[in-house]
Length: 411
Figure (cartoon, rainbow, N blue to C red):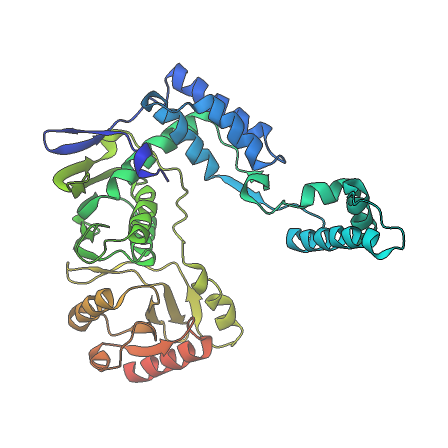
């Protein structure tokens, strides 16, 4: 992501317009390639060496904003860590103790001499005691400081990819100032729709949905600067969601921004015409990690039921959409059950969701609700289907019990 000082945009006719760059321009490609080569050449070397070369290359004026922004995106793809045979804090303790012993030694003899600390002797003694080379002691003393950490891993990329990623990052930076957004989706397949709504739910984005897969969806989201969600963490989630939208062919986004120090109310528009391209993959089967274990645990029960994440979207009378996290089928009867997990939403979002399910939810539904979000079971009994609460993640045997209860009721 880009920090606010790196987001280049202008205001024109009450709208914020990011200064997108030409990802095919030879000068831009050359700059991106040069920066990529710098990072590639510093793998396995201390961070301060990389920072020094970048400082010489990037400059400080506003004309170098693009340079610094591209470097920031490359830093986001980098992993720095401490490399030392011995934990640096343990190493420092051993060296300071050895130095103190060396300081006391001349004072304890009968013919005390003026003190002179032999640094090499102290480090050599520590190295011998710890069973490492003397050079490793020297390098490891402060290896845990940020400047001394080693660039251990850097995800390589091509210059044109980096430039396209920069354009998306500009749009993401603008959305950090959004109070509300409206997204319109026309077309797309079930795989795209499933992932879009799962990402909205996982990133805990407050939203309202109208329409259906045939007529298209209108999705209204509360932005980071809404009355309810004025936080950087929410802004990061909003920005992380945007690349999923870019996989659609026909879509539009309009936002109301609170821009600048004076929080001017301005607009922002985004559509395929802006030429942004996604830098993430669309799997169609994405789920939060906490749920990925359930199929394996459920199959260990050896019940008659099958479990799948390949569920169709369920229209809630044009007022929303149900994107089941799982769909269960009883082969003998052909009876199907949808399961939606509420482990990540805030209480306000859950309350509105429950009201929608009360009015338009299917009967063959299991609602798994995190105890952290449930202030009590008041009103939960009005939801169609079965409900159970869970602590960390849904328990397979409780899911099976709910399935059997639904099948029994269906006759």
